[in-house]
Amino acid sequence: MSTDKKVDNKVDEVIGKVKDRVGGATGDRDLQAEGQAQQSKSNLKQAGEKVKDAFKS
Image (cartoon, rainbow, N blue to C red; front, side, top):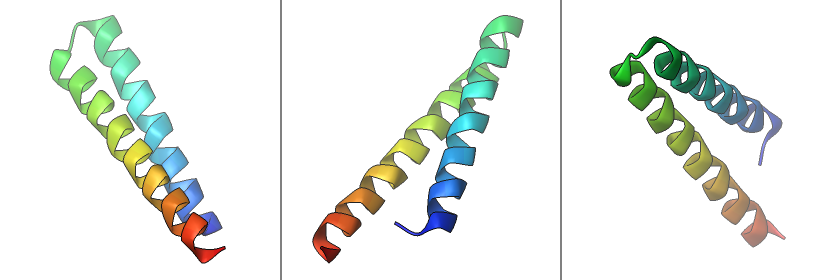
């Protein structure tokens, strides 16, 4: 996995966590759901990149 993609995916994950927690704290279910979706998307991207790396070896 390239370093740029790792950083981008980690940033997306962190932003998703922040949205999830802020949404939960403020009662904004839309923001909370958006954060959870962003985290899931980031985790899937990270998993996909790990699979690609495994096949490169």
